[in-house]
Length: 415
Image 1 (tube, helix red, strand yellow):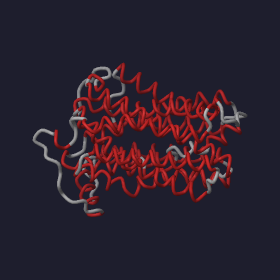
Image 2 (tube, one colour; image 1 turned 135 degrees about the vertical axis):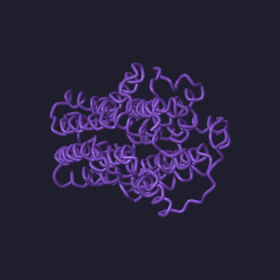
Image 3 (cartoon, rainbow, N blue to C red; image 1 turned 180 degrees about the horizontal axis):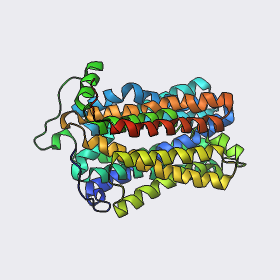
Image 4 (cartoon, helix red, strand yellow; image 1 turned 30 degrees about the vertical axis):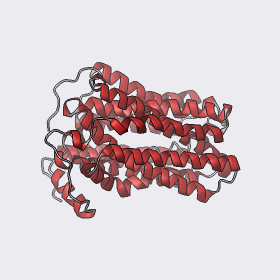
């Protein structure tokens, strides 16, 4: 694998194109977060259903499980800028639909089901194309910086989302707040029209014209990377993290807020969302500024284990202050190991099928989060969300420990 030997601080941000992409992506992530904060709160107030919160997770991530490889294949064949724009259009349509339903006070469970599914489809169009575009903008030399800063942009948006979303509910009301939220997707959409990146700008690398063949394509891609234990191991790490924990506790945050003595739609509720995002944001800034934690598979596993420990602590906490602190460190460790794993996968991907490999990774990292809606949401409806989250993180800790043994084996995998 071809790794850069050294990385200047904030290397990707030294490129003007990436700076614009970073800012507009962060704003789009913030819009996505605002929608979650407002819609989750309204659904919780109206239906009081942990199972619906679990479905919110499933519907958000199931499209990644089913369609990430297909989306990555499209990004290999077509212009990823246009695929991202289609995803942004879907996001905007969903926000408008939520706003109208809130204004008319006619939201029903089936409305929520449809809109949550459409939101998930928008995300799967955005994900693999976004990562492929990062590679086009910064190249392999600054890929680690680009991936980590891209994750930082996401968490910067997630940090601003709870604060702005909570303020919008208090000042404007949920209906007007979520309608105005649609405007935040526009900067990325407009920039992508003329951004000089994508297939037509790759020197000597014409766009891949092979058709998308579904399962046959997926098998051939698996065969192409099966001998690279780092790529396979990091994909397994991302998939198991998504399966057992993912972000399955986010839709349950209103109930955690009630249990911690802050069951209102104001600042203290938003801070539970923001603490996680703040930790990830600090991780991105500190690690980029100091050039720390160069991509190594074992380092990613250690960071993932620390993340498990903080999630277990949060699930057992009865103190609001301690819960905030643990969520902060959870965000720090999550960004660190996820960005490292994704960098290792992209660096180890064959160039002609990079979008497909990213699609497989997204299918694992994001698609497997579908099941965290079951492990935390639906199981939480039976045994309580504190127990379901804690036990899920404990099982994941055991799985990650086993990956150390997996990566130590010298024999390649045969598909």
